Length: 582
Image (cartoon, rainbow, N blue to C red; front, side):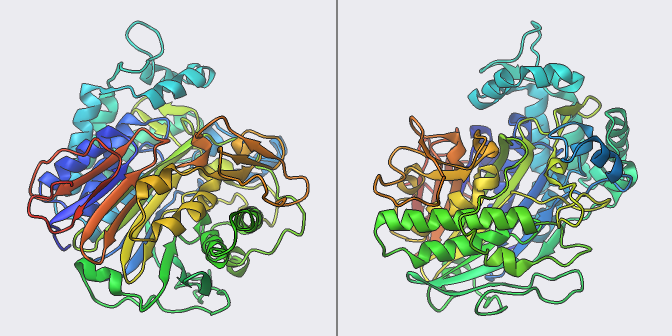
């Protein structure tokens, strides 16, 4: 992969920034820095991501091509769907039946092989192993998660061992968090990441999965393969959606999926590099999102809606976008599933039907915590938005004692309703919330991602239009108040618009009959944690990390050990010799 003179990165934890700095100091590019940050996060943020979670990423290569990497694990081959259906009409929220094959490590390996520099992933994993061995400091966010989930932690011996201090009390902010078994696993993965699926680590993990009561076996782990596929896409010009369609997403039959009004189009990627990457599109802005089983398939419709009302008064913009977000949420809940083995209604996801005053279904539980996003871009035009997750806080509520790996509960997103596209099937992947995004215009290249569960498309639709302006201050954009619509997923029994102060004008017409608006006292974690990086046509790099999170940004040169910036936003020209933030 083409080396870079400088790079910018945004991540939600200081340890991730330190890891990225080390990767850049070894001569790494944006992918190397992102993977180093991602590996560190699995050590310091076990409530939100771990080796036992999934990964979805979008990558913009220096030649302008955009690809999606889906490392989403499947349900066990031995899954007993009828037994689960006999026990309840819905999947359990947590526990052994919600554990699917973890995809994070395979996703790292695939990204490193395609876009990284030789040896960079191994070095990142060794650094993460040292962090686990020495005992990373418990952050404020992890301390809150431990405090708020004591019953869940005490119920699982693995979690209890991980999160109980030597004094027998739950760990608190500032305590060390030694993880010797996880350190050993990370060291083994540094030598061979595929050992997680077909080696010594897989053998140990399979025994742990069996003892915890999951149906997963060594054969299920060995069967996992990450996918590198074409993303979904929308091209916008000014305030009007010029084309909306899906690019290169295949159905089970191998035929191109249905598209929006302009039909399926080509990606329009011409060879280029560096800041020239932003000249790939003749006019307008082009966005890419992850295809099914990711909910990214509904994001193009929301971006098109936001563009279509950009010139209208603020109350009308809010009303239209909020209504369209409800349409998209309902379409996702009805239509999203694993495209392998069935033909999905992609038209219905890309252009959701209006609800016509109906309310979308409620999620069965509240998936809090869930996700971390890392974004990076370098001066060669390589950009990545990488999201990894255990879904709910501490995932399934299970930590394998033999490996120290917290296991996700992505299987809880399956439906047990016969005929539903997201129905639980042996070997199927669950509907997924992770929603990375890449954007490009003649003036700008950006990568963004966010924490926010089912509301991720709503959050991105409110921030990306402003971030697409090269002159906008990304820090100010992320700090602006936002709203989200949900029910149990945001703490309400019925559909509710939860608004940070100032996000919804008082004169906004009703979004839909019966939809209440609840205003929070201040900024809310439920409004998401967005991470964004950008490269302008003149070679300037900048980055911003959401002030609702605990992270920050770094602007680094590949040949120096310059420290990350203390502020959340960094801006400088991409080709400065020292790579010093200005």
